[in-house]
Image 1 (cartoon, rainbow, N blue to C red):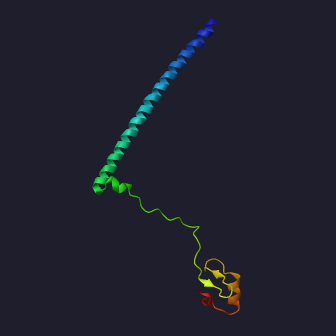
Image 2: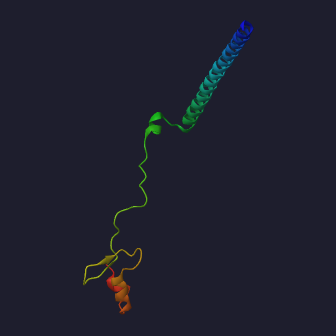
Image 3: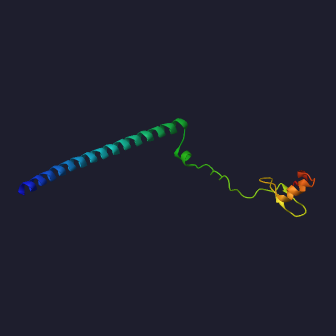
Length: 116
Protein backbone atom coordinates (compact mmCIF):
# COMPACT_ATOMS: atom_id res chain seq x y z
CA UNK A 1 0.00 0.00 0.00
CA UNK A 2 2.88 2.33 0.70
CA UNK A 3 4.19 1.75 -2.81
CA UNK A 4 0.82 2.77 -4.22
CA UNK A 5 0.84 5.93 -2.15
CA UNK A 6 4.36 6.68 -3.33
CA UNK A 7 3.35 6.18 -6.95
CA UNK A 8 0.28 8.35 -6.52
CA UNK A 9 2.27 11.00 -4.72
CA UNK A 10 4.95 10.89 -7.41
CA UNK A 11 2.35 11.22 -10.12
CA UNK A 12 0.77 14.11 -8.31
CA UNK A 13 4.15 15.85 -8.12
CA UNK A 14 4.72 15.29 -11.83
CA UNK A 15 1.26 16.63 -12.64
CA UNK A 16 1.85 19.65 -10.46
CA UNK A 17 5.15 20.34 -12.22
CA UNK A 18 3.46 19.89 -15.57
CA UNK A 19 0.65 22.19 -14.52
CA UNK A 20 3.16 24.77 -13.31
CA UNK A 21 4.98 24.60 -16.65
CA UNK A 22 1.74 25.06 -18.58
CA UNK A 23 0.74 28.01 -16.41
CA UNK A 24 4.15 29.57 -16.97
CA UNK A 25 3.77 29.08 -20.72
CA UNK A 26 0.31 30.63 -20.55
CA UNK A 27 1.68 33.67 -18.70
CA UNK A 28 4.47 34.04 -21.27
CA UNK A 29 2.00 33.81 -24.16
CA UNK A 30 -0.33 36.34 -22.54
CA UNK A 31 2.65 38.69 -22.13
CA UNK A 32 3.52 38.28 -25.82
CA UNK A 33 -0.10 38.96 -26.78
CA UNK A 34 -0.11 42.17 -24.73
CA UNK A 35 3.17 43.28 -26.32
CA UNK A 36 1.85 42.57 -29.83
CA UNK A 37 -1.37 44.48 -29.11
CA UNK A 38 0.61 47.47 -27.79
CA UNK A 39 2.86 47.39 -30.84
CA UNK A 40 -0.06 47.22 -33.30
CA UNK A 41 -1.85 50.01 -31.45
CA UNK A 42 1.25 52.21 -31.61
CA UNK A 43 1.55 51.52 -35.35
CA UNK A 44 -2.12 52.41 -35.89
CA UNK A 45 -1.71 55.67 -33.96
CA UNK A 46 1.35 56.53 -36.03
CA UNK A 47 -0.59 55.89 -39.26
CA UNK A 48 -3.49 58.05 -38.10
CA UNK A 49 -1.15 60.88 -37.11
CA UNK A 50 0.58 60.63 -40.46
CA UNK A 51 -2.72 60.78 -42.35
CA UNK A 52 -3.91 63.70 -40.23
CA UNK A 53 -0.71 65.61 -40.95
CA UNK A 54 -0.91 64.75 -44.66
CA UNK A 55 -4.46 66.10 -44.92
CA UNK A 56 -4.07 68.97 -42.46
CA UNK A 57 -6.58 67.62 -39.96
CA UNK A 58 -6.75 68.34 -36.25
CA UNK A 59 -8.55 66.61 -33.39
CA UNK A 60 -11.26 69.26 -33.64
CA UNK A 61 -11.92 68.16 -37.23
CA UNK A 62 -12.44 64.60 -36.04
CA UNK A 63 -14.80 65.49 -33.22
CA UNK A 64 -17.31 67.46 -35.31
CA UNK A 65 -20.43 65.47 -35.89
CA UNK A 66 -22.35 65.47 -39.12
CA UNK A 67 -26.10 65.94 -39.08
CA UNK A 68 -27.86 62.77 -37.96
CA UNK A 69 -29.51 60.77 -40.70
CA UNK A 70 -33.23 61.02 -40.95
CA UNK A 71 -34.97 57.72 -40.34
CA UNK A 72 -36.71 56.20 -43.33
CA UNK A 73 -40.16 54.77 -43.41
CA UNK A 74 -42.93 55.10 -40.91
CA UNK A 75 -43.24 58.77 -41.79
CA UNK A 76 -46.15 60.99 -40.96
CA UNK A 77 -49.20 61.79 -43.01
CA UNK A 78 -48.88 62.73 -46.66
CA UNK A 79 -50.79 65.75 -47.97
CA UNK A 80 -53.99 64.96 -49.83
CA UNK A 81 -53.88 65.27 -53.62
CA UNK A 82 -57.53 64.49 -54.22
CA UNK A 83 -60.59 65.55 -52.22
CA UNK A 84 -64.31 64.83 -52.53
CA UNK A 85 -65.91 68.27 -52.11
CA UNK A 86 -69.30 66.78 -51.20
CA UNK A 87 -68.10 64.62 -48.28
CA UNK A 88 -64.67 66.03 -47.45
CA UNK A 89 -63.04 62.64 -47.97
CA UNK A 90 -59.49 62.82 -49.29
CA UNK A 91 -56.84 60.60 -50.84
CA UNK A 92 -53.08 61.17 -50.97
CA UNK A 93 -52.69 59.43 -54.31
CA UNK A 94 -50.83 56.56 -52.68
CA UNK A 95 -52.10 53.05 -52.29
CA UNK A 96 -55.42 51.74 -53.57
CA UNK A 97 -58.03 54.20 -54.77
CA UNK A 98 -60.77 54.68 -52.21
CA UNK A 99 -64.29 53.47 -53.01
CA UNK A 100 -65.74 57.01 -53.22
CA UNK A 101 -63.21 57.87 -55.95
CA UNK A 102 -63.76 54.59 -57.80
CA UNK A 103 -67.51 55.24 -57.84
CA UNK A 104 -67.06 58.82 -59.05
CA UNK A 105 -64.70 57.76 -61.84
CA UNK A 106 -67.13 55.01 -62.85
CA UNK A 107 -69.92 57.59 -63.12
CA UNK A 108 -67.91 59.53 -65.69
CA UNK A 109 -66.00 62.11 -63.64
CA UNK A 110 -62.29 62.67 -64.19
CA UNK A 111 -59.52 62.31 -61.65
CA UNK A 112 -58.53 65.96 -62.24
CA UNK A 113 -61.98 67.01 -60.98
CA UNK A 114 -60.93 65.96 -57.48
CA UNK A 115 -57.41 67.43 -57.51
CA UNK A 116 -56.62 69.69 -54.54
